Length: 112
Image 1: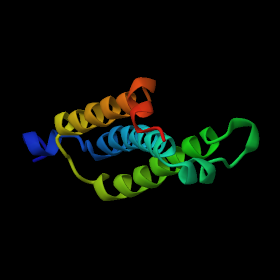
Image 2: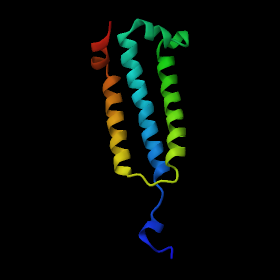
Image 3: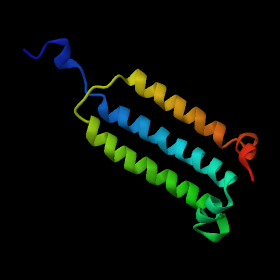
Image 4: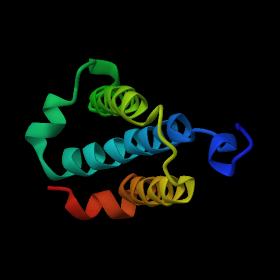
């Protein structure tokens, strides 16, 4: 009855949602870092708290992107079993891009 392979298979949607959303938050930080370097207007917009400059907006947007994407993906995938290898691949790609975009020699290429 409940002994089939499909019945024993655990739902991996919640884990996939957590992985991908965390990486998406990192990617958002990288994108906002490049955008702030490329545009003085965006850099000024991201200066939400004076002492930290644009870092306050960059980190806040990254947290919002993580939270919103996590909630959306959690509810979309909670009863599903997506392939965790694909989720990990997406996670590694997003984090790799984020690291590159927050590396000074990279984001300074876009500096105006």
